[in-house]
Length: 156
Image 1: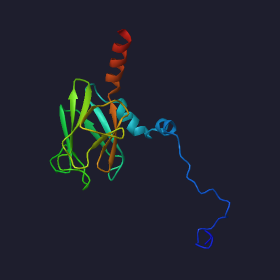
Image 2 (image 1 turned 180 degrees about the vertical axis):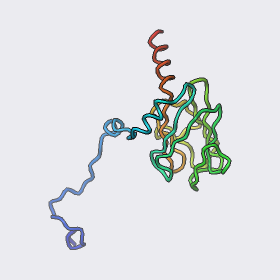
Image 3 (image 1 turned 45 degrees about the vertical axis):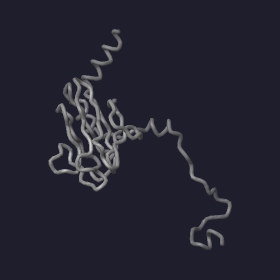
Image 4 (image 1 turned 90 degrees about the vertical axis):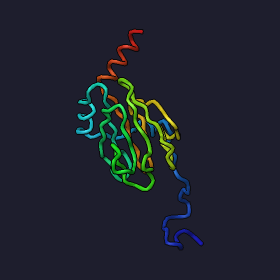
């Protein structure tokens, strides 16, 4: 049966493949930040960071990381409450080490992903993506800390 007969329309000489974007093109696009989010990132004090939900039920939500340990989960007492069944009650923790941050999975059922790779723990880099259940969050470090780390690296 022709595709037109099935109600899909089109001619028989249409291309029946899906275009695939190269991974470097997708990586370059990165998350889109509106001016309010950019201002919030620029205003981060030293020793803090920001998580912005890029995909998931709370898309656009922002979470400040400014404690030594920040808990994430479906439990109402979690510092970052992500209300979805794909998130464990005690899913992950963010740990601050001076001006750097680490994410640790707490043996959650669905795991924690860092830039698409399932991890037990990972040191975070500016712009990296953390996936917790359906939620995809982008990590933004304090610009003051990034500048300080760049000047230290340049002086070595």
